[in-house]
Length: 260
Image (cartoon, rainbow, N blue to C red; front, side):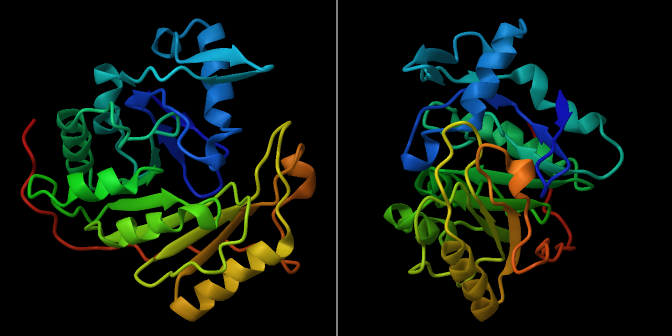
């Protein structure tokens, strides 16, 4: 129910939800659409009907699957893991029920040995849901949003409004300058260029802008990749070095366990 992943900033992915819809320009070449189509072709029922062929590529159909069977997988993992939640969807997609989000929250609370990273392109709903008393702030859960260019900088304000132990931003794929971003109260910033056959270019100056903002705000900076058609060839060096900074792990007592 979990998959080891080549994503540099996490250990495994956990997908209790699969399927999505395109939200903004950063979604245009989403790797998860290609992956969902591949998994469907391999005969995995969970991914059936999530994508369709359009203009020579696969795109989301809008179908979203809430996978009860995958939900409890982390309860079986004893050794601590860093877990990217829903790499194949968005936990705060409007078609993911609040009751199901609560179940995900409960599993994360019951497994404090793991660190969970939740990334959404819909932080306005995330702020509404997680501001409710039913969703306590969990010290092992990091909350993030994706920001691909200056057209969606408003997402950062919703992230700041969300109760969280750790807040982070994924500037990936970075397809425009975000020089006007405000990183106050943001613990971590990930920057990465788009990869794949239709990858859009990411000038170095856009990356440097974020790195400098991180130094000014005390935000940990993680440079993931330059991207392009062959991301292994372009690598992940910036200024001749790698940047693998991570936010400090929070260690404090958890609230009373949620009951499913």
